Amino acid sequence: MPHVIATTNSWTTSATLDLEYDRTIWGAWSTASTWGTRSTSSTDTVVVQLSNAISARDAVIWTSWNTALIHATNHVVRHFQQPITPEQRAADREAYVRAEGERAKAREKAEILLREHLLPKQKEELSLHGHFHVEIIARSGERRRYRIERGRSRNIKQVTADGRIIKTLCAHPVMDVPDADTMLAQKLYLEAEEDEFLRIANHS
Image 1 (spheres, rainbow, N blue to C red):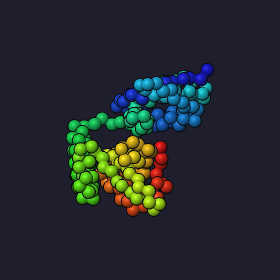
Image 2: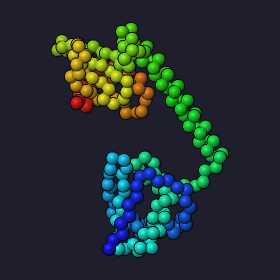
Image 3: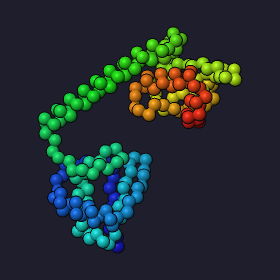
């Protein structure tokens, strides 16, 4: 009978194994296995079925090897975790704080730039409600109203004069930029090329 192993998505360990032997086991194991997943409300379970090409002993070796991996979110990161020294931990923390500081500066600059391109009424809306409206007069003469909310995806609503949502639009910069930069890009694009914006945006 094939061996069946199930592992959940929540483990992490710093176990050290014989790397050369484990690579051999992994190579053989990976050619004689099938993967599937079973999802519940709280976890994903990776179900691994080993063919008879893998011995029961090797299945045990694989299970041990499996515990030397780090699991990040729902993706398996296949590498061996080395013991973290206090110096490494401090350096990682310093790098994290430095990166967060840079992101905070970018968000602050983006917010200033966005407000520099807003009308007084739009600035007031943004401060009070976290969104602002853009009025567009189409080439046909039709007047359309868009509400640009804070965020990156699905944050544009075409609305009626009384605020009823007609549709949701999604189009944003490819790069992961601060929300204020995304909102400004969306505003300028709508004002300059509404037809093209509507053509490339997802509608729902």
